[in-house]
Image 1 (cartoon, rainbow, N blue to C red):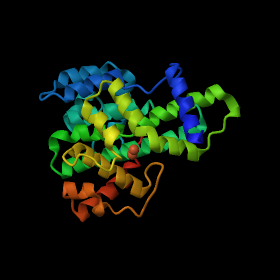
Image 2 (image 1 turned 60 degrees about the vertical axis):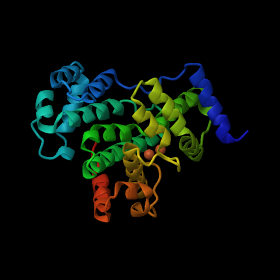
Image 3 (image 1 turned 135 degrees about the vertical axis):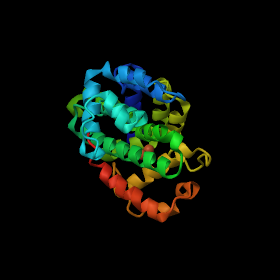
Length: 280
Ligand SMILES: [Fe+2]
Ligand SMILES: [Fe+2]
């Protein structure tokens, strides 16, 4: 049996025995997400939902006032943040902050990988959101951000399960980083897709998690295309686990499908480098 399939078997065993506390999609974030997806979201309801979670509220306001949102200082209540930033942007922050809670591990090696994964997820979310704006998909700004933030959720899922495997096996088990990386790369799409279905998130997000690496992807699914391009840009810049400076974004089929200019691709790269400053 290969090392990869034996690790996968251990992962599946802890999952089958319900021995892992899996990443969750925060209840408040889910309700906010459902409300902003409506044609006419109720701002009062969104405000109330967020305010019911004081820890979430504090974090959302601190990110809203951070250096990344330059010029937005003074948004000291959720209502003010909504008025200044818009309801979609605040909903993005709610998902960002609530997802951040999932990216923790007691195992230092896994915690380090999760940190890189978090940087990658935020980079992709920022990039896909910008692409949606730039390419005129204004009604899908929130979807682009969410889909990209969650596209690699299968990796988080697998890392969480690997954490449990390590805990159960004790110090006797040594899992090389290269093996973890191989398992994450090869299996995160299918595990991510299933997790999305379990979370009852809209199918559009599950499809992005499933199809963001396949060659034969849907050329009409612009949400998927934007996430794929943002993902490639992050890989080019080394935002995440991999760095491949040889990627030519202009030559990517996704850039052609979005009809995006070389200048805008360069702007995307600058934006992504800046997104590394977005902490929460
Ligand atoms: Fe991926
Ligand atoms: Fe990715």
